[in-house]
Length: 308
Image 1 (tube, rainbow, N blue to C red):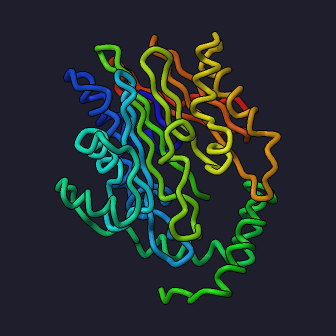
Image 2: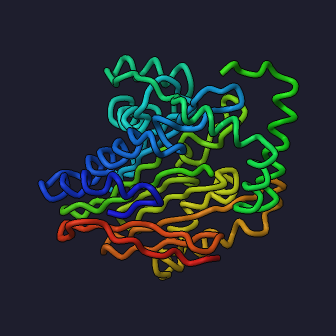
């Protein structure tokens, strides 16, 4: 199994299932659920940073490489585990693939998926500090001028909306099971201060997630709008199918987004797992990493991503 930054907290749970003979889908869902439960992670699940109105909206998707069936949800509130709703869509509502908002929440209730709080006091404080002058300066220093432009536009929006009284990224988990089947799961709370109803690449098959046993699995984190415009996860697998290594394929997929005009540009990253177990990652920033763990390992190992 491999996972994006902060996804390593769930790898042990997923690998335990793989050791017991579980499917890659089971392992991916279990690993992502651990990440979604981690209140210290403010970009996924419980503790995720809120939207423009101070409400947490979550997106997720899961894809089975054996069948290329997938399930996805977006703009979900009140459910700490959108990955489980996404899997339920895949397996219990096969006539559809993506549900959003109230419809996804209604289906989750029908499927018996647990409700629970997602907004924490710490996330609220981070949400507020992120729009301060100091918070905007720090964001620009870390992510570039596109991040400043994004947050300044948020302040403009807030000035025209009722203000509530009270670093972002996604998690990717990719697994290969003993039967040779691949699965990819993606979960996020999306951009802090996003416009209500905004859907990220995490819920878009082909953009933030794609999986095919015949080729490999790929997933993205970061500037989701770029991944959607570049269909980046699918692009990574096109490069892999053409003979590139997983790392080179990730770099190629990201390279296709570099010339896209974007006033709000910020980092974009990709991960890839091949059917033979090879893996790799790339990022548009230096120093990015991902985690890997196999059934023979006692703990995860951190690997560097290539900078594009």
